[in-house]
Image (tube, rainbow, N blue to C red; front, side, top):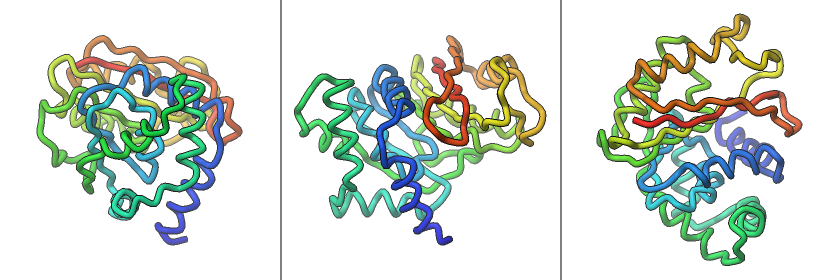
Length: 231
């Protein structure tokens, strides 16, 4: 399957309906994301999640795949918004924001600024100490080792202003069914949440708040690990 085909399928299947998972993640973003935002590992879905970032003043993003960035840029330039975004908008505006002003949706798209190809494991092509908030939705869950995780988190930290907030959300595979543990990078040996928190501390973060939520969506992922941390 080509990357282009994968992106289309990804948007259709993963974001083709409103689920309890969507509501949970959306509220987490709505309540914790504000100011100038950098989204790490934007994938093809930044426009989807950007609608929950109502308190953002601007949103920059990057992804390791050029195809994902091309997809996002084309969508913005051509103003071809897939129907799913408007389905989500109706839900967002009426259930979470208690509003019916659809101009809020277009305003979110207008907030999206720089979209670059970059690797979370290498120095990022964005100014340091610039952002009020850094988000990652499934991005650092893709690293392969604990040392890589530390590099990724340090790169997120470097982009934040003093007192800036990192918001992180990752999905855990169903084969890990331990309430206080997250899967090891090889998928076989669990790594404690304490070690996960220590990574953030080593990177310089403080006020680290991590939690788990059972994923009620019918997917292969059983649990969502989520949280915030202050620079």
